[in-house]
Length: 259
Image 1 (tube, rainbow, N blue to C red):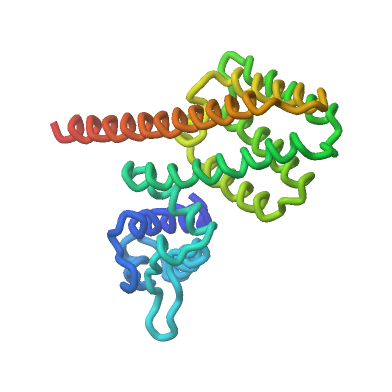
Image 2: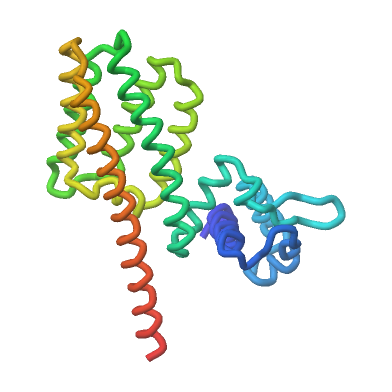
């Protein structure tokens, strides 16, 4: 195993402990010597490991003291939140709370992008949009759809709409949300609480509206918003199911190991 892999793995384990509350904000992290001894590595590698943890935003270096635990939930930015979400998956209550927030923000940005683009001059070449949706359909029809790739393409479509609309801040946040979700398999799967084909149908319906130039009626808009909200409720419910199932499987494995 290479030294970079060791550094990444140990930094992830230390970050998991911070996320789980095993190390409290304001406390000192284990020293370079302690990390080296616990994980059977030399001190130079231990120093690199703590440096990586600092790059995650989970600790900060204090001259003469070592590394201090940050209050990642209170003071962390979007990059810290991304790492925190990934390390919180083994703790369903924390991960589900964070996923609620992620989905709520994503829902607002995507809804704003779709509605704003519908009422704009629609500067994106329709042929380019249709080509990407064709790719989505091809992926969705596979015997085992690659949910990660499908979701990545959808995030890219939303990014293009936000760029066309000049919504740079929303685009930046959407990029970060995409990184968070695409790092967590359970989160990816949750966004396909319904069949992958349904995602394709929604995009084709939107393109048809944009092609018509007339825009949807108020009743159609209201229905779309209701359906969009219902879809996201199912996404959250599916994420909870997946984490609960994972927690039960972990408990069963522990019981089997101690039996």
